[in-house]
Image 1 (tube, rainbow over the protein chains, first blue to last red):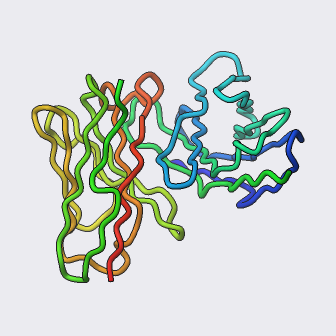
Image 2 (spheres, each protein chain N blue to C red):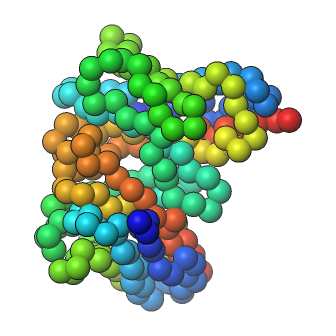
Length: 113
Length: 116
C-alpha cells in the first residue's frame, strides 16, 4: 500500500518570497508522483508529475519539484510566490500501472502582501 | 477543448434520500474516476470506469455505486444518504484506464453535496 504525508497543513508566506511545500511518501513498489493545486471552489489542476529520469521536474506557474528516492520525498518549490498562488496543494502517488491515486491531506498556502 | 463537466454544482438532500451526480469527461477521454473530498478524510478514491466497466473500487460501502455510458459520460449514485456523506464529489477523466503517469487525471469542479 502507498501513503502520502504532507508535513505542513498550512504555510503562510509573504508575496515574492520563496516557498517549499513538503511531501513524503511510502511505497513498496515504484510509483509516479504528482502535485495538484486546488483553487477555491474548483477542482484539482495538475501542476507537475514525476515519472522517471531527471529528479527535478518543472511544472506550470513557475513551480518545480525534486524527487529524492533515498528520502522518499517529493517537495514542491517556487522561488517567488504571487497572491494568485493562494490555494491548497496536494501531493499524490500512484503505483505504476495502477489506476488510483493516493493523496496527501493537503497544504494550504496563504500569500500575504 | 471543454474540460470535465460535473452537474449539479450544489445539492442539498435529506438523510435517507438518494442522489445521482453526473460527469461528462473531456472529449476523447474514455476513463472516468470519482473521488470524495472531505475536511476530515481528505481525498478518497471511490471508483474508476473504463469502457462502461468498473475497473477499480475504493473502500466505500455498497450505497455508493456508479456507471458509465457508451459516450463515456458517468453517473454516481448514493442511496440512503447519511450525514457523513456530505462532501465535495470530484470526477476526473483520463485518456485510458491505469497508467496514471502517461494518462493523468483531469478533474472537474465537483458537486458539493450537503446532507441534512
